[in-house]
Each structure stands twice: as structure tokens, then as C-alpha cells.
Image (tube, rainbow, N blue to C red; front, side, top):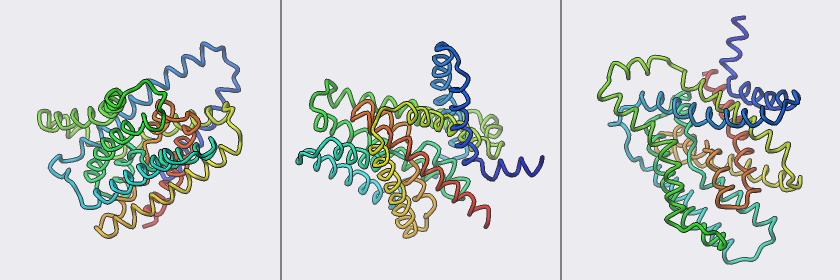
Length: 316
């Protein structure tokens, strides 16, 4: 029994991913009435943001606000993410590609501009990185992403009825509820309820295990999307290749830039680990919905890489 528990702890991410995929197929095989599927969707819709909020609150509670400051590598990575995105927007606006090429380009640019995952701070902590620097970059890239996508939406989708101000307001509201609110709550508890803060910080890996539950739910949703999609297989393959290449590229660039500033792990996670649920939402809301597949597939690649990193960290 102890060996089994140790195995689950050591391989929590791949086990969570496999559990999410299996859970979908088991649920689908039960042939439950439509009402059960509606209830399950509502439950997942509630659990995901609730678990993410709790996970971030636990992680932010461990961070001293005084250590949250701007680092030089933040600027380099913001320039790369923002610059590549703007170049792709310009390319799409000035050229007349086929729909299939447009989809691949949009998938690439969304994978590049997608902000850092809220769970990156949890994995960064497990890998021995700087949680405060990850939080700082997560805030910065979310603001930059909201601004750039809001500016580009009327250019990429002229038929949209959403103005820049409306798009920016919608995106900032999403960012505030997911990211800013748990940070504010954690800071208030730290300063006004120090005993509660100490109690919250006591469980060492609770935030990480909450993340594994979120990951299982995310993989179940991704599996459902792939099973029920009517998108041609070559689109799925193309988007899968694009998402895998951007994942490798961003982790590699993050590690390389971070090495120059003695912050390899933190920069790598900040650049490579993405908020794929945010990417899926942006794709459905502002872009071609087909590109939402890039978010689901990217989540597989970056979590496989995170599993390997955690394995190497245990070996040390």
C-alpha cells in the first residue's frame, strides 16, 4: 500500500491526466440520461474555478508581497510573446491565406500569447523556483494579453460587434476573477489574520494536489472535445504539431533567458506553462473556434514536460 501511495505522489501529474481521460470514457459508457450530462457539465463548470481559486489562494499565502518585484527577464519574455503575436496579426492582415493556413497561424499565435498558467506558481515551487517572480510575470503577461487581443480582435474579425473597450473589459474581468481576487484575499489574510495565514501555509503540497484535480477535469474536457469534434483529422494533426512545437520553443527560450539571470526554472515555467483554459475561452470568444483545440493539446504537452521535470527533480 505504501508503495502505491508513493507511486501516486511521484507521478501525480501523469496519473491525473490518465484519470481525466478514463473518467470521460467511463462516464460516456454509462449511457446516463441527458439530465445527468447537464448536471455533470454544471458541476465541472463550478469545480474548476473554485479549485483554481483555492489553489491560488494557498500558493499566494506563502508569498511575501515584498518579494514580488520586476525582474529583467520579465521584459525579454514580454517582448517576445507580444512581438511574435503582433507579427502574426500583421501577417494575417496583409496576406490572403486559405482558411486552413489561417487556422494554423491563429493556433500558433494563441499558443505564444497565452498567459502563464495559474498553476505555474505551484509547479515552480515544487521545482525549487521563485514563486514571487512567477506571480509577477503572470500578472504582467495577463495584462499584456488582454490588451493585445482586445486591440487585434477588430482587425482579425471585422464582423465582430465587440469594440476594443468591450473586449478589454470582458478579458480583464476574467483575469480579475481568476487571478487578482485570490491574490488580494491572500494579502489581506497575511496582514490582518496572521494566525489564519500560518494555518493556511501549513499543508505543504495541498495546492499541488488541488491542481492535479483541476488537471484531471481539464483532460476530461479535452477528451470530450476531441471525441465529439467534427473537425477534419488533418486540422487536429496540424494543430497538435503546432502546439507541441510552441511548447518546446517556449520552455527552451524560457530556460535559456532564465539561465542568464540565474533563474532558469522560474523563467521556464513562466514562459512555457500556459493557462490553456484561458486560451480555449479566447479562441471560442474572439477567434476561429477550431483553434480552441490548440489549448487542449498544449495542456497535454506542457504537463508531460512538467512530469518529466518533477521526475528529474526527485532524482536529485
